[in-house]
Length: 261
Ligand SMILES: Nc1ncnc2c1ncn2[C@@H]1O[C@H](COP(=O)(O)OP(=O)(O)OP(=O)(O)O)[C@@H](O)[C@H]1O
Ligand SMILES: [Mg+2]
Image (cartoon, rainbow, N blue to C red; front, side):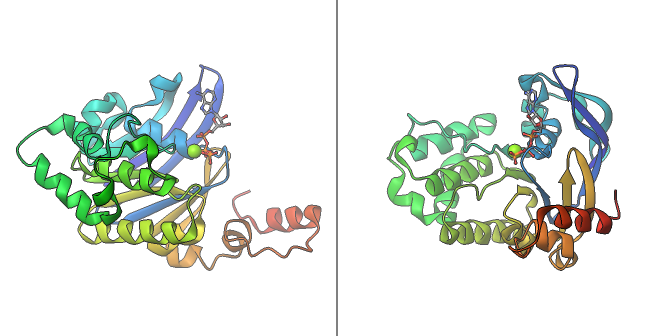
């Protein structure tokens, strides 16, 4: 189990972004983190993966524990190689000038061995669209194809925990459905998944548990089946709010109902 405990993060020594975040990512489950733009979701993923220093960020309090190992004291390459926790960043990081297949090979750099060619074929089987594109430069792929390649690259590191940052961003509904179908089947094969999303509907439909983050704090959590029925989540993340609601009244009602305020 991955556990985040009371995590506080600042950027540039002074910009406080996470104000004591705690959550759990149990083994074998899909855990989703919902939250609006700027809530701190990506910051949390960076903190878990040891990438904060790259962005001039720092953990000033709290911990990230994988079983009993404090990940927050390790560098990102050790977290991937030794602790098998891999993060697919939100901007679909693929090497534009390499072909799809070369990207998959490059992603296996941390574990190059005889199994790599077979693992490339496994990724191709999981994402059949990539088969005909294996010799195409990644820069020519569509957004959806690049996202699938980015997930495929993460799988080449043989993760135990896969963390995905808004994989549905900018993708057509049909592609989102396909991608979430793959996320579900990866989980059914035993992969632990931590999913950051704004597409609450798609995310909650594959997740076991969910958390909602606002302004650097977890404000709500529970089994995804409960969150999907929760009035606040429905209104503010599933877009079921009435269009004729006056903004102020809406905000007032929301605040009144928010137990956490
Ligand atoms: N390197 C940085 N230096 C200073 N502030 C930063 C830095 N990176 C992020 N922030 C700030 O931290 C806050 C949280 O950003 P973060 O990217 O974690 O949010 P997010 O929930 O992932 O948002 P989005 O849904 O838009 O991706 C924002 O106010 C952002 O401006
Ligand atoms: Mg983000």
